[in-house]
Image 1 (tube, rainbow, N blue to C red):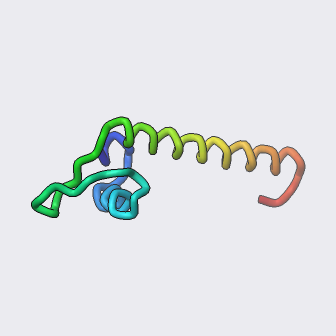
Image 2 (cartoon, rainbow, N blue to C red; image 1 turned 45 degrees about the vertical axis):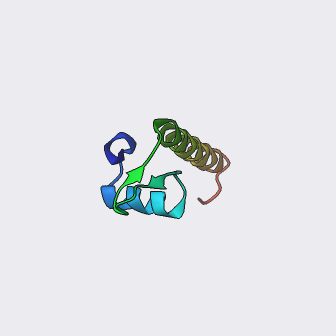
Length: 67
């Protein structure tokens, strides 16, 4: 899953533990059960935020504002 998102495994585990990506812990307590749909939804939200930040930076630059 970390490879799909292009993130480190450690950071991905933090996202799972924080609830940013929904998951269930398996009975052994070390592994997570994650739905692909939830991973793809997280990736889409991340891409939308990235695009929004890019558009804001472009608008600020066009307006001559410091960013």
